[in-house]
Amino acid sequence: MDAVTGQPTTGGQRGLGEPDGFGRYGVPEQTEDGLVCHECGQAHQHLGLHVARAHGVTAAAYRDAHGLKRSRGLVASAVREKIAQNARQRYSDGGSERLKAVRDPTAATAARQALARPRSAEAAAILAAAATRPRPHTRTGRVVVCQSCGAEFCPLVGAKRRRFCSRSCASRHNRAQARSSTPGPSRVKPGPGALPGGSGSSANGGRCTDTSTAGAHNR
Ligand SMILES: [Zn+2]
Ligand SMILES: [Zn+2]
Image (cartoon, rainbow, N blue to C red):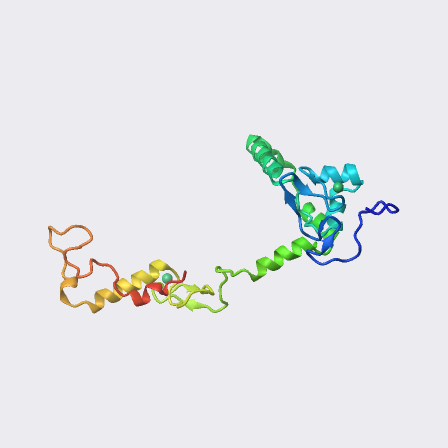
């Protein structure tokens, strides 16, 4: 904390993880006793209250000064869990109706965007980590026509072969192929005594045996 300005000591621009007071810039640190204060090194369950009382800075100013995410709750995880529990309880006790009545998402978004401040170091690091994670549900931009049902779809990036829109279309196609390639007996209608499913008459029990295309579905 700067004794002259009353602002928290920032020391100019820092990079994520660089030494910053009693902690590291952009990194929330928690011990058994609570969150560690970047300003004085003490651990507190309610760090936001502590920095306001002991150092005269708001929680928001503290987060900004130390590169912490603006949505970062300055409470230890046990306290956070308790707060979340209470909120869930209030919500199920009818708070949801009151909230729905008074909330104004458009105004909230406008207020958030009006701040238009650069991302904190912590938030930037979280986003960067998320960007490098593989995303199995991303689709290619190419449109493929399902060979079974004719539906048009964009295949998943991770799919090896892209001929069918779904697992069920792939197996329907496989069943049809197995039927047409199996001679004689499998095409004979089951007799009156046959069980549903025709397990007695079909050479393969009606199931697909063509494992080479079993992985062709678009999952
Ligand atoms: Zn402190
Ligand atoms: Zn299909």
